Image (cartoon, rainbow, N blue to C red):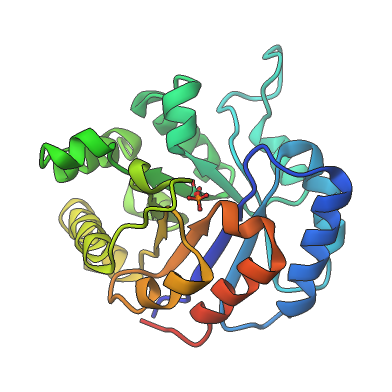
Length: 255
Ligand code: 13P
């Protein structure tokens, strides 16, 4: 049984006042005990105020990145202990924007992922191909490299707290969504990868989110695919009137 999981990745957006208001609006519609898991991932300065705004609701807190090392002399970085300290249950790792703009390699993502799991933090591990890679029919090869690299030395027990987000880079922030068939094919590939590298239970329990221009008008069709278990939402997570219908589309879907 896989509970749907919808997460909002706010990226480097919003003011403090906007973030608090947005979090309160989402929390008001997502009570504890809801049939869908919902997480908000604000920029780090807003983690604490967002935590306060979602207190008592069913909404969980996530960060957008972390460093693997123990607290110490790493100017500008954020330790996993700090994320736990402010109430995070999740951290997004391997987002394509980190890979493209900030030099996050598969090896670095792997170190972060292992450190996060050792601390008991849930990980939303992002993978996805560039447009040129898809056009060259290299999608599965890219996913294989990212999965093998990011999950190196991650055993089945450690893998239990990992959610995978399939985010084709060409669909992020572009308004071009993967078709339900394209998303389903990639998700099935990822689940089968987990089946062959871990075991059936790990594959059957794994939740795979789709990310890339998810909107209220395409969410239901994407989420109805057998291997799509949720969404990682960027732009549409910044407005309650867009994010709440996406959450609603995920309610009651159990696979
Ligand atoms: P958009 O929903 O804005 O395309 O962003 C997707 C994403 O990158 C979520 O992590």
